[in-house]
Length: 446
Image (tube, rainbow, N blue to C red):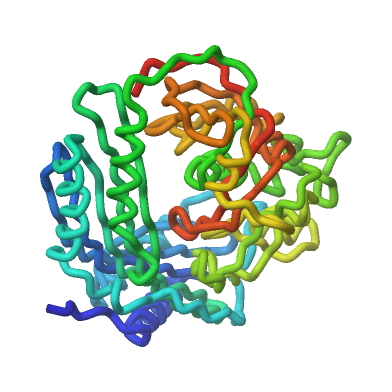
């Protein structure tokens, strides 16, 4: 049975009613965010389904400004009485806060790109269909004598925003995600795989089953190698794990104030400077089929195509509204999704392996944390499939490593890259062959 979904007109009407309630309650300015939808998921472990959920949720977040004082509250009452109470509370909270020297009025009417990220085939997935996807992993695991665990989730989500100064936007998207970890009976082998898409036609449960199980069987009884600097081949998930740390640091204000890697010696930021010598670029393209992300931010600022790094040269940093105004720049919201893309001939993952004399093949990285924000050094662990490549083929599994590395140095040391693929949440990255990657210690964890 198809569940009733809130229409764009219904969502926009709620936002407008909240804005009117804020004004009536005494707000001088205000902003509203409405988000939620339908989420279905199935969890499995020890080769059996353990839980399932079918969740409908919707919340409204109110931002009320009185003068330069701004307060935020959130709730889920969407009737007129509930909206009025929430608006009154938001305004009352704002009145008791101190004046802010960084207040910026909410944006007025904006032009937003249209991004078609909603797919009916994904939106209408049933719990039975999700269970069948999990069942593919479970059945294949039983047949191969391994034990699997994982999670499959489908979402039909909406986001509507509006401001008292006239901005108004609505976006809806769908997504389907399956991840699985397989373990061998002797406990020495572990493999992981995942698939993510907005359109069910771009999704593959079979590849997840095959990928997790084959990596687990191949990783039995790993050998121990000495820590040190090694050439590596990073599968796309590992690339997303390490390169994704850029988003934790890319912030114009922190850079200008001398607080992160993008701070320029002597003041200001590194916009215009070269970060690496390879033809690799970081981009945001909301309408790109590999991303299909929202065309506006929670603050109702348009999310437009942005090249953050162009062939190694830093071109842009995210600017919040106050810092953008202070520096006479356009606001640049944090991107919902991003892509790493190379300019030039590409090399498939299989070709990278065949063309490699000796390297470590890494499936994914885990538990990544910052060691040094100013020099952008992160640490973490390899996991669920780490192998030695010799003379163009995978020869043996390797015990996991802890690494200390800079994502900037990783991109500086790239020798080959593949076409980007979507790995999660709209993030699209290639596989990378990297000439040097620093492993600092061996981990006994599987």
